[in-house]
Image 1: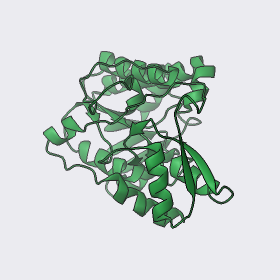
Image 2: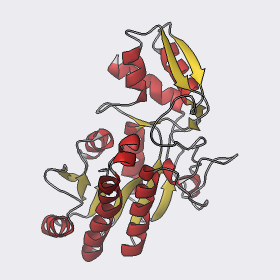
Image 3: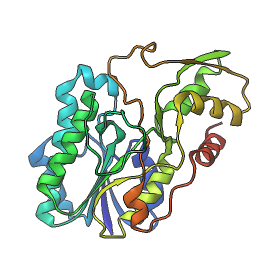
Image 4: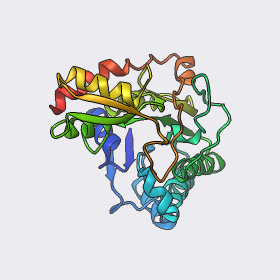
Length: 279
């Protein structure tokens, strides 16, 4: 297939390239070569390149930044996916779009499934939800993938931050009352590579298996990195940030399993491989 990747220079985009390059022809774009917020440019670019499928891994993901730059958040995360969907509709091709656990309010006592009631509590979550809605209103062939707590080789992320802080801090304070599913972008990219071989369109939750708090995750990172760091638990309310975070973000990969795809490996196995690469 000829696959156009928007946001190819990001953390997930980097791993998508690695996973897809040997089997598919890739059209790699960044915000400089494909500005998804520009409707006419986006439509012209995609019609001229005639891909078989578009993967949108472009997003404004600075959660606190979204609170202060709301226009930018809605432009990139809301309008951008709409422009891609309109272009894909004209060619009658599928769009893969990466969404987020932040479309939920975080108040649940069980893992979230795809058709649970949405209710984002931050501008980031609201803008990402707008992107989902815009795709569904403009395109029939779509894979909307909600994922969470991403980390990978190319870009800043929680494990990298923890290991960097550990160089100069014997004690590190980490939030203990936010729970989710740490997900390795390489594993997510492999899942996307499987999904696009199918026509099982719709909304999917795709994360590594297992769940933990940020505090638990930090402790495990230091354990497997053989670092003697004291992790001090704090509540989210004590760790003041501009944007509210959902407190319970565990996503059940229900539709993924119903369509007989294999569950992604446990996050504890994934982070072991990742830390071997970056240490």
